[in-house]
Amino acid sequence: MTNLELQKKVVEVRKGIIEGVHAAKSGHPGGSLSAAEVFTYLYFEEMNVDPKDPKKADRDRFVLSKGHTAPGLYATLAARGYFPMEDMKTLRHIGSHLQGHPCVAHTPGIDASSGSLGQGISVAVGMALSAKLSNDDYRVYTLLGDGEIQEGQVWEASMLAGFRKLDNLCVIVDNNGLQIDGPIDEVNSPYPITDKFKAFNFHVIEVEDGNDFDQLRSAFDEAKATKGMPTAIVMKTVKGKGVSFMENQVGWHGTAPNDEQYEAAMKELEEAEEALCQK
Image (cartoon, rainbow, N blue to C red):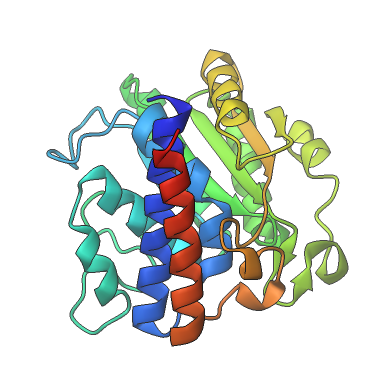
């Protein structure tokens, strides 16, 4: 897809995120919005997946380690055709297949249940190791939050990934700088993130703007070309990206918009969509 086509898709994803958390009256818009570009790039450009055959054996796998940003993943899966976008209005409702965290048993396109921070990367490492042992050529991607990497389990999994030279594994860190209690460097600083992954024998790619498709394309191409070691892509993003009053505001980590805020956010996104259609 062209960058313009991807930009149109990412606005659709952002609208789905806002639709979902507003209807649920709960959820996590901030980190879902910051990762909207990487979700979109993975599912529309990078990964070998098929919405008509979600469990096909040779598909690439994705594990949302920061599982609380499920609205972003769900909206992307809907945009990709796994289920109707209308389903976003059922987010977190009893009986809905869209629960507050991804559940592999209920939602088409989900490869692993996740949500307990730090555990998703371990699942992804297991998948990548399994592929190596079975001589399968699928790739495994996992998205972590920068606050999440304060968890020790992240580094246990990384140690094994580096030791086993899992070059079919791509770990992505959404470095938006904010977690639920405030700036990450004031809560429990994980910096320098790149040096830590290098110490665990990862090839590390730094992306200055993880909300830019050219930079994402370059990073994922480099990751695929890397042999003999896993890759970590550390991307700087804007929490709440795409909705001006949510951007870089820690309060939107886990707060749903009220009716007035919902209308303002959707108006802004619709205007962005219209501007892209004029290009």
